[in-house]
Length: 365
Image (cartoon, rainbow, N blue to C red; front, top):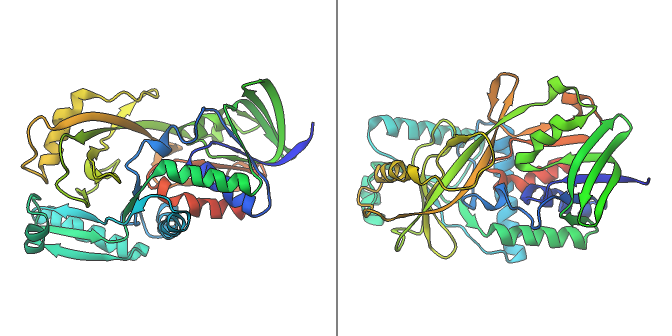
């Protein structure tokens, strides 16, 4: 059996970005994706926001890859003519306590290296968005929205043109590894087969931790754990009150039920945080009332019965040891002792924004 160089497991936006980056560097990776289309999970079930690095601790992998990824993604979309719009975002506050929290968020963003920020007081808010109930807003000019499907198709095309082999409907059913390489059992549309490779990159989103836990040769105690946080989305019946993105202050496990607009101008709200045990993409309609209350905190005039169930996404929430791990994690040989194994773990928001920057980092391995 011939030994391949690099195999990537996962054909979402991060896996495709890595395949493109490695192919452009002349490394001709093979990418395995179990689904029939690219990016059927995290990459297509999100708010499609190009984030600007406001929320993440200075020096964290999330902060660095988000800021670098923002610049790379805007330029890539411009050059490849991928639909996107630098629409800007307002993070809003009402009352003294929220205002204090918003100023702390601003200080964190500046310390992390974010730019394009400015303040809007009540007079400016009433003039530009009179429907909005807020005393202060932090405006982020570098925040945008993107067609995630168009982005993934461009990445896939670039990767294949540069020599990558992208294999849909190829799921890894078993794997093993040691210091000499990795063996994979693969279920493909024409039957099962084995692959051997020198380098294995796991970029499988929700599947990354389960793949690591099943990898023979990795000590079980080293494999991390993850929880699943479903985020429900509801769309607005009727016209959007704005072309901007409107965010409340972030919550413990997410960014709050925010208002985003897609490239056609349709407004939607979400995601919330709903802990689940198994992957389940059904919208929980019982959360509609809580959504309305969350939205009316900054849009008191939300018309009754104007929210319609839309879709859900599921975020991997990582735990290392007994503690939540809120940063992105590149789980490499320094962590597990297997040369050539790199697993991207906990890649939730802002993973879409950070994909090109994360791919740059993987190229250095």
